[in-house]
Length: 291
Image (cartoon, rainbow, N blue to C red; front, side, top):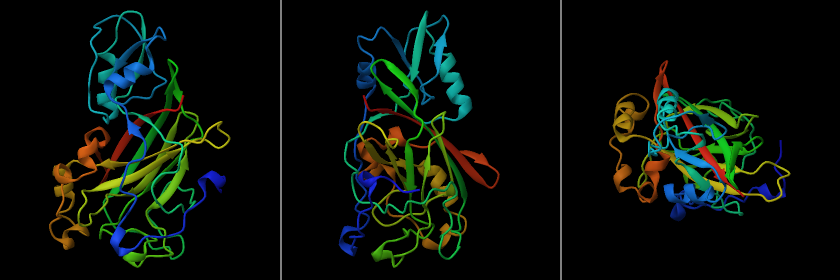
């Protein structure tokens, strides 16, 4: 499936001197105060819990205090956060990670236009990237004008390096024409988009991360794009990297604390992984303010 012209791919203009020039977030992650401001004057009581689907509406009695639970939680932790932040009357549970996208596509990335859930293989050679399995689920919701709902039809792209620190379709990596670890999904009626991939490797100067881009549903009045990155707990990464194929690369040179992108709000985009079989799974719930 092709995107409309506003989603047209850019030519591959990367070079060794501008290594991965999409390492810049486009759009803004709102602060807790700004999230509350989205509902100011709307007559809605707002509770900040962990990142839960925005269509959730809670009714009950209890404390009116807000919670600043980290933006990504396991399903069990999310449920707990939701049930402990209910106030008298009705309220809307909002995630701490609500973003404001920009109208432009944002920094360079290779728009391969590959609609697939499992992004581990190269579609030309069939070669599957080795690494610890990772299942990543996005729950995308729209927020604005005092209301929130699941965002159906949004395009969610992800891309990241392999266990050796190489990106596909990059001149400096000698991978032009390959498309492993790249793909997109369209959110369903519940705002969900799911991917099967591997735990990313590392390359010099950056902490471990996954790039993602959320783009408006086709036919939307205005086309919006939010581009950012998801991050991983350093302790877990250290554990993963003791095994093959990661262990052959030696010690990485950059951790979260000394990564420029992570220091600009990466803690809000930190994944909380849980063990699943021989790999991990994570759910990332994000609200997009496009009003």
